[in-house]
Image (cartoon, rainbow, N blue to C red; front, side, top):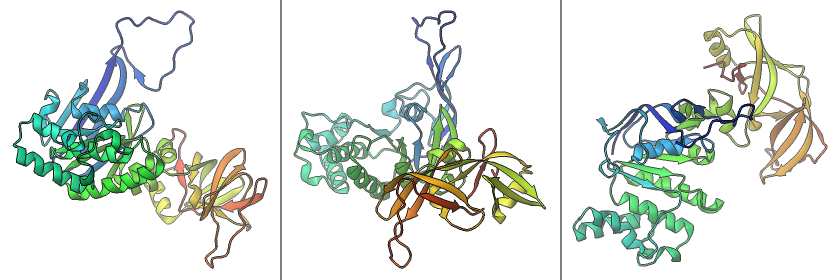
Length: 393
């Protein structure tokens, strides 16, 4: 059990000694990470306070700095700037073995010549723990993870999901203050990933440990985390509960990254008409909800060109007035729903349509080339300014 405080944590990878300067006129290599005279900044000004027993998920695309941040907490990467506190103690220069942290890697990292029991007992043997205490902890962890029947097997005789449970077991037998997990499910197939997600949720309820979990899969982030930290190019984009980042994305990046299928975008205009805010796009006008009116008024938002975001599940097919026309290009049958990939005003727009009505009757699933009309309410609109920031927050 522990609190974690990351204050202005920065990681800079210095330029290699033999790095050559680009020739004059040569095209410059493009990178999204900031490059300074000191080197490439992989993580910049990372501030985060993690409460005791909280489950924090770092999520973002490859190369955004999430695994680097985790490795700095573990002590496997040197911290270039800022301060890291565990239970109020500054640990920047504390050796990894003295931080009372356990880490589960993506690749399992099990010893192939040892049995499951021996793999799990190994970190305790290194601590010269009494044999009966080792036995108790290994058997308790095995029971928690439902791998008691595999204790005498070697890793090669186990499935991917079973190996990952052993790797988690080896971490929790140490009863660490903080459990770090670096994309532990990415090597598993879709069915196993779903099962292991449920196992991790159950495990979290059984052990008194603070979790810090890294993934690029936003579904994992939404289902596992108490709070999600969304990263891009070494910077934190937003911190919040899964519901908060879904309902109130801070910017266009978060809006597009969180949610499947991703949010639809329209070129639109925000107008103030008689003291009320209205969004217009493609010839239709939508009055915003009272909550959004209040948020925009508090920010003193003026009339301006915006990017309007609407999630696929919030779009409604309608033949009435004040609707937009779309042409179906691809129709994806997903069982209880159909994902219609349409073209509207030169933009790709995804619409989720239930395959049955409330009476249980099958609806038209709309094939390729079908013309549909749709609309959306003012309560589901997300408004982003020219810089990509949410105008409400």
